[in-house]
Image (cartoon, rainbow, N blue to C red; front, side, top):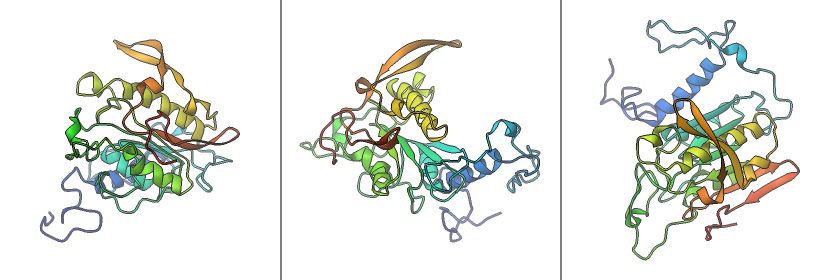
Length: 296
């Protein structure tokens, strides 16, 4: 048993580690544990100290499918493991943290939001200092769990706050959560803000709960393009393309080929941006959707 009233150790909210379950430390430690398990093999099993007697796999059952050869030309010096980490919400904050501390991570994808900046209106998830280290993609939302009225546009998308009646939405809000910190550190980064997007945008949940379909399509094509470039050394051209081929899910195992128009699916309130290593030099655009008002 543990003492809820005891002083919590660093990173915990209470004297009982892991309580409550929706706290940043669980997602940070969980990400680290997931990496340990993913990379485990019969020769190097996963110790799993938290199993408490429960019968679990001793190692990743599909370990042989992972390419363990060191990347001979990593985008980040020393990060030669061909491994990406991705998280949503608290998981996005966690992977933003872990990419800077775990040398096995080659790139990171954060779904609402890539975290690295500080300031009013930004996510308040406290994962401690974040060091932008590996290429980072943030796909981020205009709204929280549902579309909010204009008068609540003063906060972040996750934590809406009242706004001044005469104030327009901050075009740099989504850049400021992480992209700007990555760019200032000289690390490749991209932020994509789908139009009309909510916090529930990035899986099949939009088929049930409040969200648009814009984020589902954009997240799919950008994640594939990002991993293709930063893990497989494929061309960076898809990251800056104005249209993308996409298989639109129709249900019952049926997908329909469509073409996704980038600009028609981007926010016109908050700037999307990129600063990445292209095939023949740097590629940078501080305001992909031509929102206006974002710093160069």
